[in-house]
Image (cartoon, rainbow, N blue to C red; front, side, top):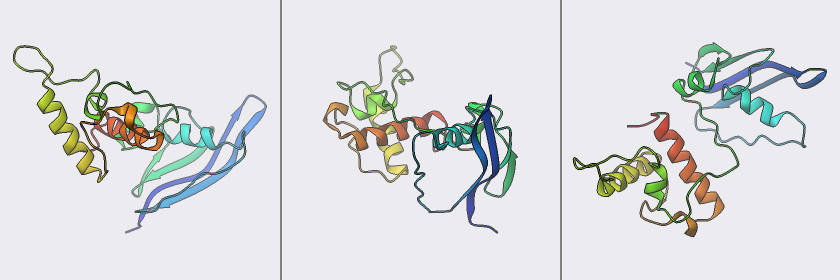
Length: 165
């Protein structure tokens, strides 16, 4: 069994006369951390947007855990396969806690219809622990560094995509 979690093979994409990607191939092994570096206009965002189902490639194949996907038809298909793109822009409410931001717009409620703050914090702590992150669910987001705020975005995205229970 291959340890490859992700493979993108011979991915091509043009926008009109502009060729953004010309036969790009990339693979990521299980447990591997990979940086995608390049100059502005090199095609990094296009490649990631194809992986996330945001942009359709002209050609190429995506394989996840040995299963040939081809290309994702949309963002929801990518999410169902466990792929989520965390964009550089952070969309958090600074005065709310980490837990409140994770569940923002999807807050569990009590029988009386009020936000169940204890349940929100407990579920947030569970989600954070399942991803083995060092975040305090009760800490206000404004107190976090930009890097740690991005971790909150990752937890939020994983929760939305049901990547963990």
